[in-house]
Image (tube, rainbow, N blue to C red; front, side, top):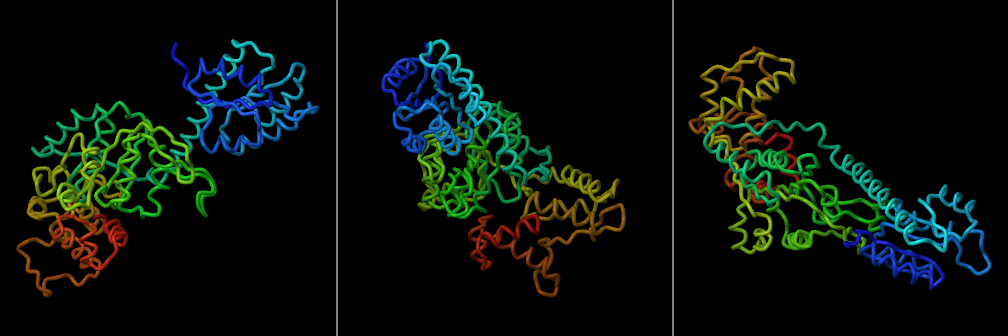
Length: 457
């Protein structure tokens, strides 16, 4: 008979009771540890996360008021607020057991016990433990994704041949649990592709957690992704699961994975290989079950040759590779996308029934769109905000076409537009590599990311 998956700690000063409990429980459950000195309880919790603790009520000879048991019950609940403690009581100590349950114990069992009764009590307590952990995970998940609630991720649209190929691959790969690497320039919709994968998977009813690795500093990387224990560092006032734990059961999307340093790549690879994480400040390993989707605009294969990206990590994350085409490659989708964004922002800014003339649409098709879909979206939002008519014209769009002179006489003197254009040129020149573009512009990477967000690029 298969053992029930559970970690149990038995604490009693009677060695005979400990050995009897261990002999029986090891036949039923995967891990059973015993301890006759309650002062060692914190050491056990440092090394392991227990599902059930069987705790005696009295440890000092001649004492039977249960004060020791209540003391160690409080210690256990401070170590793990979700701990399930079953009290071991002597016959006739029912009043004491009721007092302890009011203090946070889950149940009690009298000694000498019958094995069937002990098994039934532990099995029921395990169900409560699972419920507690699920509620705790739900609360943490809601808190983690609260910042994303107001973000609108519209449908992944397209009718062009390049997009039909993307949709075909999404349809094949989506239902699987294969790791997917999404490649594409900035602003092409890589996160939309990742969300489309999630929606088509067997995990679609679970969480989708997105992490922008380019925006996380090296010092916060482990805490954000792997979590931390209370007291692990100055501001760690409570236990906090990382994004891997929060995403367990669902999909974890790691954007801008090409920006990771070599040391962080090694830490990420270790977690992906073991499928376990250890929170900062803790030696406990927590198993994770995620569908991994990564994305980057950087040339990972060239970086492997240069020695700036680990080849074993690349193999680990790209079971299937999906490339999202640039807007310049899918000009046949221009009209569909323009009407989609016009409808979206027309509703948002209370300007329904907005139209666009053919000449303007042709102008948009001729433009190179170095910022891709994100730049198009920003341009249409701006045009709708500033337009005084219900029809968008060429005058509503400030676009730098190839036919325009780049002399200072033709450049707009608007500082915001000039900065935006410089950023786009730097990104275009460096093939979308944010790190190199930031260096050329004299900015650090996070400062450039803030500007990209500011201008919707």
